[in-house]
Image: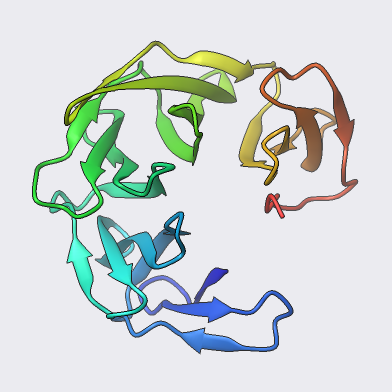
Length: 220
């Protein structure tokens, strides 16, 4: 797994062993890192990086050759996720309002913008095998988890209207899907304090509380 160490603009990325015994630094320039994600084959990292915490672009890093590729230049990108085949990267871009963008993982073309509605904030949590995105959306009424279907035609993508997966009077954030894809962990304040709840997926027909104190789900 990958990890971020350091405050603000002096962060570094490290490869951590699951047992925590080793922490190998990835040879990347210090800065502000957001959302590092392994590619499906484990060879690459996608991440958002900036010299300061206010400006980020999307990059990939080849863990074998140590080559770095910059995929965006707008300085307002976040939350990269890989397509299941490893050929594409979706991320959130912040302009006049947040939107989803998709770019080839090898770069070479401008990202395609996909708008799914009016929200204060968007974060892509997962890209599923059936080309649906799990998206956390924040608006004035709170934070919900949405499912957004994608359809590809050649090198162009189309997006359907988002479908609520978890939408309630309380907030639901930091969702993480289980490796088997049948359960989702989510951080919620439904009881008045932040707790981790587990719900069935893709239909939230069963739910149970997994923690009685604040915490972040990992999907592991």
